[in-house]
Image (cartoon, rainbow, N blue to C red; front, side):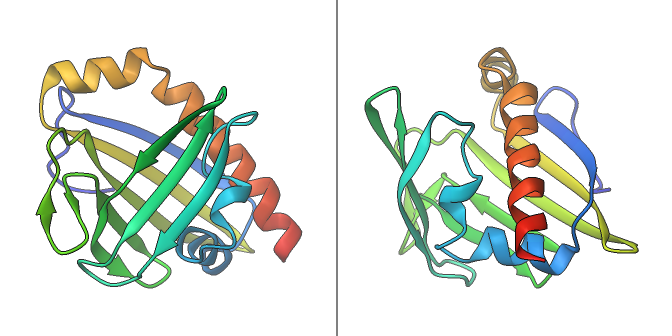
Length: 157
């Protein structure tokens, strides 16, 4: 787990996934994979740009019920097959976002036998933002994304 979790600011989802962490890491870090799991269906990713380095772009565009939504961000930490941290608080070139929402932390722990402990943390700037994200359906939405990721990753094995 990660230290310094704040129950007022951090939403945490942990699951055991029946797929190796190397494949899950590949899914999270290659543009071709993101549309297959990144948003709960029937919503879809219509564009993705990944520059996998600290300060590199992690930009996605979603179609949510016919409305296109852009989400631009950067990678803050990249540890191959173990940890990914990205935020919408900045965009490429370290340009501050006018309305940042969260920082996401994805942890991948090898459990052996092709299984992975998957932890997703959504860290927010305020209690109100965290509560808003929870009310938007954080646990159901991010849980669906994990289910989609697992099904997709198992097809890549």
